[in-house]
Image (cartoon, rainbow, N blue to C red; front, side, top):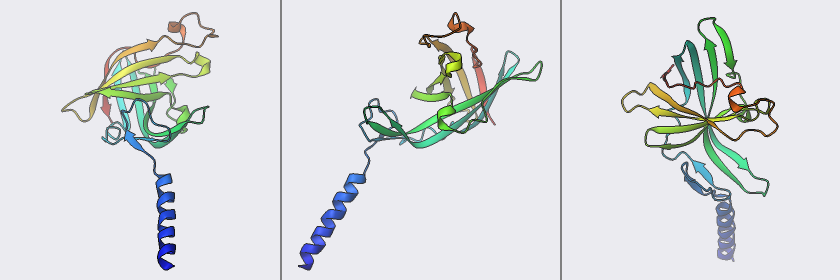
Length: 191
């Protein structure tokens, strides 16, 4: 009788534990299985975390990158997955007037970060910028390149607009919507 009770308890514990296990997949997974955890198994995100600064066209750009671990994403159909994410916020200062042109460095909530890591290929890391409704959900993309030998330096390049903007936009063209990301290449230095 004790053996049957022990066996029953063991089976119950095993079933309960196996139901709680989440499938872990690499961060580079394209289609996450429902309920999976898209984890930074290769450890690529910690390199970016922190503050990076660069200057171009008499403007100083400050980017702050934050890693969010096991963030839950849900869909209206009930599907969901968890993932490690890298997001950023930034500040722009006109050095000739010392005027702050843009600053969202005080953002703390996940949803308020406008820059998000998308993917990478070798040393090129692709990011997207998603603006708010006030700016017609304007979107842009850019690339950050991690140097092989310079651990405290990255290159910002390939800024381009994403042509999908909000249909009821008061601006005539996408170029009229305020955009404070650098549109030219520059070097960012870890602070």
